[in-house]
Image (cartoon, rainbow, N blue to C red; front, side, top):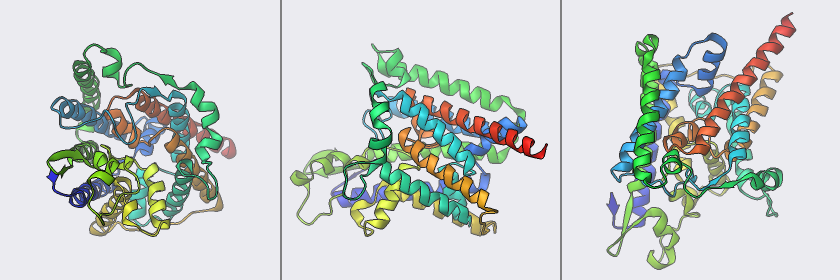
Length: 393
């Protein structure tokens, strides 16, 4: 997918993202694919249907990346965010994942589910989106008149010293097969992805659940589609074929006069779906005067998921306006949203961003985040249940 000018290439990059996100929003709404619901069903009722749907999405991502990377069709050495970086920020992965898991439980769903609910008419989700967006924005961007961010003030001084610098990239294939990384990635991808598929389809109940299979299948495939598109949109710069990111990084040399320069080259790197940082980017876009330079993959992905969910809600006549049932309900959602904002940025992703997209790269940090999210969410549910039983007793 090579274009003669940057504007055309970027347009395809963004519109393709919107189209895939539209599918994601519609299918997640239709199938009730929900990562928080997956943990809740498992912990509270022993039902693993939606958990298997989540693991199916991960398995498709892992196996798909294994094949695409082996064929040279995706490029994951430098991604946004940098899942496979050689700096393992394990404490931020674990702490951020736990905070996100607690937050999504209090807020009745992860950020992706919140966007889907917003598209379906849930006004509570609008409040959650706004809170997550503000926290995420200031975790990354400095406060007005300052060079300090929430991250640099609250976390960096004590989490950064725990960073482990590896001699390889942090994906399992590179770490375990240092002498033959390509083979290692194939072996680990096939092993982990295959075992996941075996567990998923071991359940007869799951095999008979159309919605759970469809939800997991589509979530995994849209993550792969985004990886493929963002790795393969190129610009022909006078005979030199360049990625969008490389072109933007050398803008002054290649771009013609009058061309619109993106505000940041980072979000033009290969990437796939995640929804906490993109909410912060979306806030920056809205408050920055709706400038084209601020439109990113993440901004378009957020819009696409909401639009897709809205379309399905209208077609299925399931659009319903919902509001908080009580002050306590509002407080729980507000606190949960704040924790998702902090945790999602700290861990570099959410249940989709790290739990599917990051996991597809088999990055150790992504796996740690996934486990921490599940534990944080499950523990919160246990505490909520204990409090409820005590109040009733």
